[in-house]
Image (cartoon, rainbow, N blue to C red; front, side, top):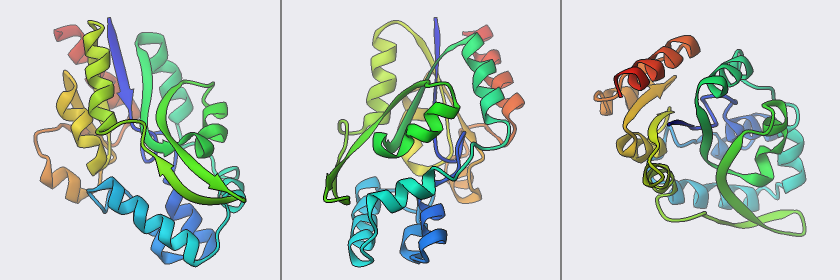
Length: 201
């Protein structure tokens, strides 16, 4: 059996934090995992920006509710789920992801939790250390062949651990730093890459 693991933001949904930055005018929130390799550093930076600018969870979720899936993402995921077991392995938070998961038909999502007090994000709880790699290892321990795709620095451990990993719509800097991973910007081509691995596997 084969499992496909996908990153969420930048792969099937837009990047959430830049959208929040654009709507609130807080430029400090434009940074993503495409820019900052260490996720905890990035989240500490975001929490400080939220506190400094008194941005509520309600403001953020209101912005998220206006965002749509990336063009073609729903059809891509539907096609993929007809061929493989699919899990979305993300460094987002369950408190953010609901509107997107509803539009996608509630696929399996493994991500993190926020700590909330009085409608303010005070902290976050990482599901486990190195969660993307651990997720791949867990599926492999169940005797699945695992293929993965992502676009950012925080996806690299997932790609490393998978039986085959691919970059999808990754920025040039990430592609240049990790040339060992085949890259595509097209959903149909990504499915073909997975299919080729499944056939050869």
